[in-house]
Length: 57
Image (tube, rainbow, N blue to C red; front, side, top):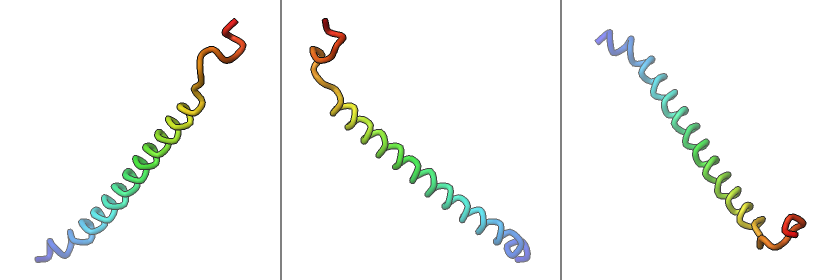
């Protein structure tokens, strides 16, 4: 029984750390996906016909 009392605080702190890191990584993943969608949308708006511009002479 003493082993549980000794190990319980470490296990609880480890679980809290694991949940915190999991939420940080999930937030980062969501942010990267949102940034990729915004970048793709911006790129699709900036793409125009190839006949425009000074390089087509």
